[in-house]
Image 1 (cartoon, rainbow over the protein chains, first blue to last red):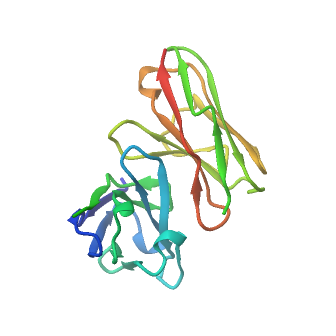
Image 2 (image 1 turned 90 degrees about the vertical axis):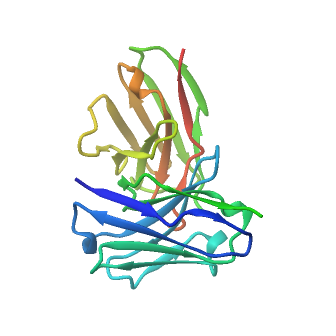
Amino acid sequence: EVQLVESGGGLVQPGGSLRLSCAASGFTFSSYWMDWVRQAPGKGLEWVANINQDGSEKYYVDSVKGRFTISRDNAKNSLYLQMNSLRAEDTAVYYCTRQLDSWGQGTLVTVSS
Amino acid sequence: DIQLTQSPSSLSASVGDRVTITCRASQGISNSLSWIQQKPGKAPKSLMYAASNLQSGVPSKFSGSGSGTDFTLTISSLQPEDFATYYCLQYKSYPRTFGQGTKLEIK
């Protein structure tokens, strides 16, 4: 069974940083693209970024380019999202997904002073 | 960016009904479209990929069709557990984009 468990969310001040992690199990992690998707409170889903199997290709939504960095460690079956220069509009539940077909439970990031 | 427009945005239906949700893309995306279900307070769940292929474990009451710019999700014989918000998602190009969602409510 595919399991994706996010961690690292919390309350951070505007301009601050957070690193989200996603622990994957139940499948061959190194064989799949991985994505981050977020959902602001009461809003719809927004794709954030993805990364290919060996980490050589990465794509981002424009609103996070230059601030967020997606990465992975295939030896640890883990996906990461480094978030810098956080803004109030980054407040959301962040979901780790395997190729947008399996989803974690999400971790809440709140950017507020 | 490719825009996805779902209709309707909300829908009231009764247990046992058959409903159809549509998703229109601002440009052709072949069949690179998924449907996703989200219940309140829960993580999203993928129902369908490549427009008409059911994800493993998803019941056959869900069906999808379409190609190019126009897509539909049909749910037959609605049950209480089907009342949720449904999103379409395109993965033809970057950035990936979602429709705004269709909230399916019990009448």
